[in-house]
Amino acid sequence: MKTKIVNYPDLVAARNREKSETVFFDASTLHLDEMKKIASGKKYYIHTYGCQANVRDEETMRGMLESVGYKKTEKPGEADVIIINTCAVRENAEDKVYGEIGNLKKYRRANKKLVLGICGCMVEQPEILQILQDKFPEVNLYFGTHEIDQLLDLVYEVYSSDIRLISIKSKQGEVIENKNVVRNNEYKAYVNIIYGCNKFCTYCIVPYTRGKERSRKFSDIMDEVRELKKANYQEITFLGQNVNAYGKDLDEGHDFADVLEEAAKMGIPRIRFTTSHPWDFSSKMIEIIAKYENIMKCIHLPVQSGNDEVLRLMGRRYDREHYLNLVKEMREKIPGLSLSTDIIVGFPNETEEQFQDTLSLVDIVKYESAFTFIYSPRRGTPAAKMVDNVTYKEKSRRFQELVKHLEVNIEKDALSYVGHIYKVLVDGVSKTDENMLSGYTESNKLVHFKGDKNLVGKIVDVKILESHTYSLIGELVNG
Ligand code: SAH
Ligand code: SF4
Ligand code: F3S
Image (cartoon, rainbow, N blue to C red; front, side, top):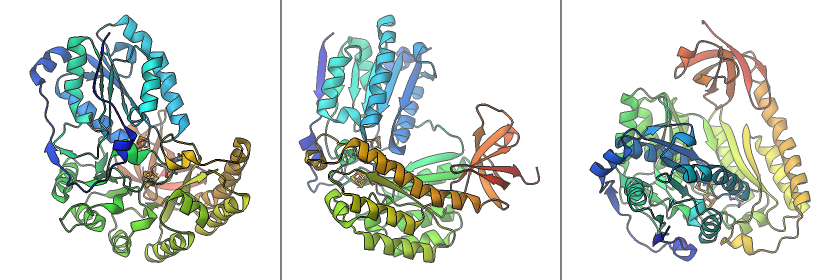
């Protein structure tokens, strides 16, 4: 099988942040009629790893595939198009993908016309792409995060010419509107507001895989929110690697606080957003979050480290004092605020004292939840070139200690729910017991309780009876 390379990724090009205007255009497909014939009676399988940006990309891919007639399947063995949507943020995310492709390659041997595609952040890295090509000759399509909207044309080309196609252009990126979308959920939706990242934290691969920060037009975002409201969505989450950088690249005069406010006025019951960088979180945003009842009082505010020198080396552009002052302002102005964070332990050469600063910050802020990671070197990032004198064993020890510190407050917070009634958006039925439902409180706590499955997608009152570290047990009120 011949390999056709349309574009190959390049980390130097991916780093480019020259001043250039964002290009906006509408999605289109060249081979629509042919694809309808090809897709007739066929199925697709997509497996997504990584963050909400990838989940939202999956919905776009589903929309495109279903628009020509492909049907979804959960069984890769039945599919004529298989897509693995990958994440590159840490090594363990990548390891899972290697394992999965290893399991899927047999389907290509059984079905010569199968399109086996790998996309997402992993393939944006040239060295990883080369490893994949060498290891898995069965894979016949690679496309990048900037090529998602071209999926149908790529599938068409692979299907009709029996080639291996690589189409991954490292570029700053554009904003593509009017894409087909099939949402994974009928009452909770993700809404992109800004793509890419310009922060270039020294450990992070995301700015290389996702291009520059580029905001969607305010009116396009609001049109989408209006549609979701009409379709009776109960919750929307605004997405961006840094939602509070929204609008800085446009001349429209709207910032993230305006997005929140305008959406809140439309009356969707729950509005969330992720992620907020501590660097450009304004007082205006805090005031808007406090002002509207339907903006959830949950802020995910990654700190990464509690030590100034480590923060400087990470390129985070804030220090401990700035972060703690921001938290203080948020806690004062937003009653009932639930704060969550991301923390990396074992950044190159992190000393025991520096790690202790992270522990002390955690004890001061008292997070209601947290994601913790052991530093994973990402090839091509500045931190990966730093000599590191901390052993993995020591990093694991620090990781365990950090989790213990975090859990003290997480457990205390969970216990404070017991005996009170909360609004819960019912998410689904338990896999092991069909009489058990689960859902999330406004503060994003997971609750399990008995109830009928027709409550899924509704907001109900639940009285909390019991707390565990990462979930609550409750009972329906009036029902
Ligand atoms: N844009 C978001 C986060 C994207 S990645 C933000 O800045 O908040 C999600 C989290 O993964 C980061 O917050 C960080 O804690 C973690 N992460 C990123 N790169 C990592 C690496 N090389 N090793 C370990 N954790 C990493
Ligand atoms: Fe990565 Fe930093 Fe950008 Fe977040 S802000 S995506 S951690 S570079
Ligand atoms: Fe992973 Fe890419 Fe998201 S690296 S965390 S899928 S932006």
